[in-house]
Every structure is written in structure tokens, then in C-alpha cells.
Amino acid sequence: MDVNRIRELLPHRYPFQLVDKIVEIGANFIVGVKNITSNEPFFQGHFPQEPVMPGVLQIEAMAQVGGLLVLNSIDEPERYSTYFMKIDGVKFRQKVVPGDTLLFRVELLAPIRRGISTMKGYVFVGERVVCEAEFMAQIIKNK
Image 1 (cartoon, rainbow, N blue to C red):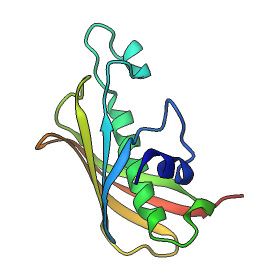
Image 2: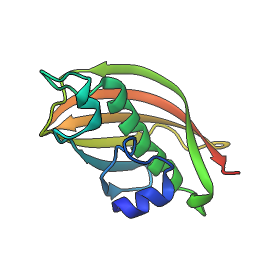
Image 3: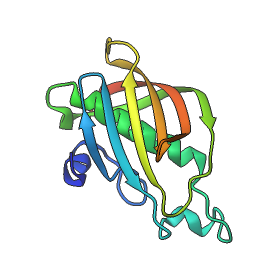
């Protein structure tokens, strides 16, 4: 899934579209990529002398990938949005810095019921998990 399709499905735009592409998608999992450059707007204030990607943005990027997984499972996904309801068990294991390529793997923990999904997500830099979390989201029809 390329960036154009991602833009059709997600409402996020620069600077908050945090997924560059989806490289693999299955019935219960998805794998996405974000290349972190030194030009990311958040590095201006976090931190100019030693840039580090904020953890909350790692979670946001993982949630966007999870949203794409959920939307991919329904008919007419362009007519729906995914809203996150809960995030649990967040762990940050390593700093994310300019030059890193983030690989997101998000898996459904249970079948989607009544528009509610539960997922587990991981953020990798190379082979190393740098962030992980469990989250719950709801699919809602756009107005």
C-alpha cells in the first residue's frame, strides 16, 4: 500500500501522517514503514542538540498502522475512521533518532466485534524492538 492509498484511508496529513508505506498485510496483521529523517518537524524542539523521536509519536505511528489494518478488513473503508479508545502496556526500549527506519508490526489480538478491535503493536529498528503497546480502537462511519 503506497502513500496515496494511505492518504485515502487515513485523515492524517503532514506533519501527522507518520506512515510512509505498508509493505505487508494479512487478515490479522500488517507491517508498515516510516523513515525518520533529520528534517522531521518534531526534532526542532525534541531535542535540537540531540534529536530523539518523541515516544508519543511512535505510539501514534503504530496506531495509524493499526488503523489501516482494521480499515482493510471492512467494505468501503474510505467511509470509516478508526478512533483509539485505550492504550496499555507501553514500553520504550531504545531511542529513535534521525536516520532510523521504523518497521511497525501490528497484530489483531481477537476478531473485530461490534466495530471494536484489540491489537498488539511493535516498533522495530533493524532487529530490535524499540517500542511496544497494546491498544483498542473503534471503527466509526464518517459523517
